[in-house]
Image (cartoon, rainbow, N blue to C red):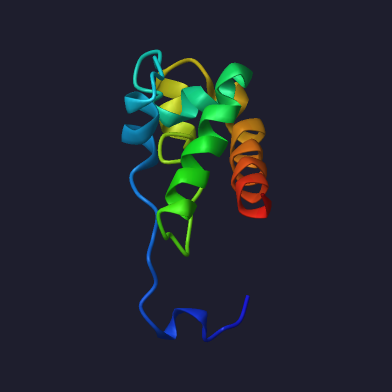
Length: 99
């Protein structure tokens, strides 16, 4: 990425966790967006949310990893997914970017 990319104001995407809930995500415990990364059936929902933010004018999208941190996953007996879902979040964001 060009080091000067953020020298001007850029439009960021919106709140992914809330958007996924709005789209019907049913998280277990306090996993929120991490649940969408664990559940393969929700991966398209994540991509679609990214695409909608991009189509609305977002120049920068972030991964859906707010609740994919080790501590939160451990609190929800899901720590074993840490590396897998953080990697998946990047892949889903890149897939949306490249569509």
